[in-house]
Image (spheres, rainbow, N blue to C red):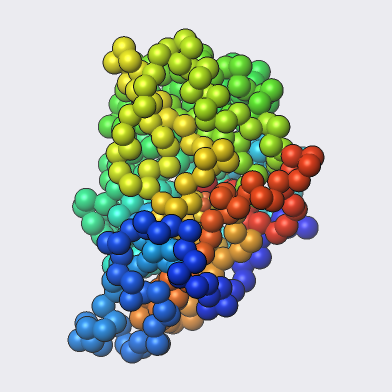
Length: 398
Ligand code: SAM
Ligand code: SF4
Ligand code: SF4
């Protein structure tokens, strides 16, 4: 059976919440509040739209006035790694029914959606997956997205294994930078956390290829799991200290339904900072921009910085400006959502740009997600959170 989250179209209007109940009284005032009610269906002609000032897209605010700034695009559900916390090998075997070609959005469909998202104030794209570099011809998609806006920040999250082959083409196509996942420098731990198919050296070669091709500043993501890789955190910090690459430690999350998450396996950001600081003194640094997911720590000897992403111990939903487009074309407004709003049917059914705009607007402006802030109230005595339907990480890309 396909372990895939339903690709249904929920009715966003059913999630109405009283805006006076916002837990974020200081939420962005830069967002136009006229987006907080779903607009009436606009003119169905996209050309007529130019003449109708009322349908010109505005920056959107959700129910808590959080803007839509960041779009993450999953370009494939396939991966060449088998990280047990994301795609356990025993489930994702040779015969696993990944999405068929016709089920996934083609590049023209992705480009069309992105063009419309940019009108709403999206400033940053992140290409992800699955393993995005497995998507055939990905450089063509990057080039077409780059052509939409030469200043757009287009990042990619990758496991790094295919960067030695693809970094030059990605850079040439206009990719801005990469984030490479690397959970351990120890080959045994790496194999335990990422599967047996590739080596630490291959990922390090990928990071070097990204650097040679100017895909920086390079970030390196390490998911920290207590008792699995946490003894190697300082080794990773030493390795990347002074390289200019930014190592970021991510608290292990209860995302998806497949990783048997337990709070006992979470090493909090505070503990991570304490452990690094004991060996390589660090001090807090200011955020680069509002909504930055990692809190920044600077090495006191000038060796660069590390980050911690404290989604579990100190959630940051109040600043969450991220939407996620799944491989098959659903818009998901939270990493922990149980589904998304289908855009593929609109795209393939001949819908006008205005109809697509309208669905983006109604989806975002009725958004109330803040799962990470609610998690502590959901924790059960055994350290787990209640089992329920959730989109899998490899479908929405982290
Ligand atoms: N395959 C690419 C990679 O691994 O970089 C991109 C997709 S992967 C789903 C995106 C990020 O999510 C990776 O950095 C991965 O380590 C992180 N991730 C996956 N499952 C996670 C979990 N349960 N908790 C925290 N981070 C997780
Ligand atoms: Fe693949 Fe990334 Fe998931 Fe690991 S975290 S299985 S590399 S998609
Ligand atoms: Fe955003 Fe959902 Fe994560 Fe909160 S839990 S930061 S709303 S993705």
